[in-house]
Length: 269
Figure 1 (cartoon, rainbow, N blue to C red):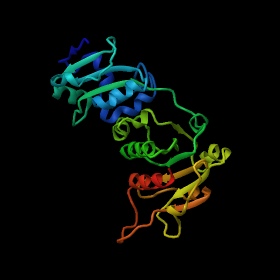
Figure 2: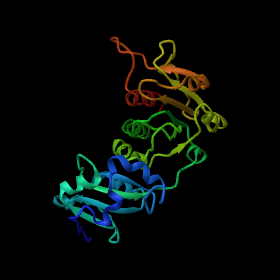
Figure 3: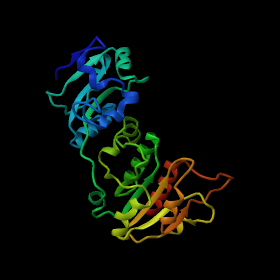
Figure 4: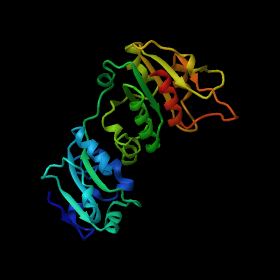
């Protein structure tokens, strides 16, 4: 495997790695709007990079600290560009305060449609307004780990391939079926067409304790969750078949959305 050492931050070969901290979203579009030859997304760390490779995603290039050459992921083809540089230069180029092993860029896969990810699904998570990429990543990882078949995102939820979402999910966003839908409640139409029972998770004390919901294994059920703080919109809650809650004690009124998702998905799995 050939590794090219870089010492000049203006080296044109590093263009795709510039400003990763605040520039991931511009990867969504090819030039001129996005400034990239191929729409890409970034991953950090050998483990997640290897998971991206195992998922069949196409690598575009890698950048790593010259002291950590052994962190290059296994199974990388010889024609994939690999650049090494001093850690300080890697931080300068990428804008990242912490350099986590290797940084890889992969071509973005085509977006999936709701019909495709719902085919054969029986347990689905629907996320509304999850703008925090770390929360989104953890939510997808939770859904995948606890037997949810797919996750649907409304337009207000962040990009699941945003760098911090990929990192927060430990690569789960690369393999778990995800699709965008219209704003809720209109976005629930694909679920309605397939006979899903739609549950809205809320801290409201008059909601049904989720432990009382006992769907049959083959009954299609969708669990809606909203953002930290505001939660689900009133329109989304009104469109649900039932409002469900996780009983709290000791004066605590609610859980972090990712923790709440873990409890609810475990109950419904």
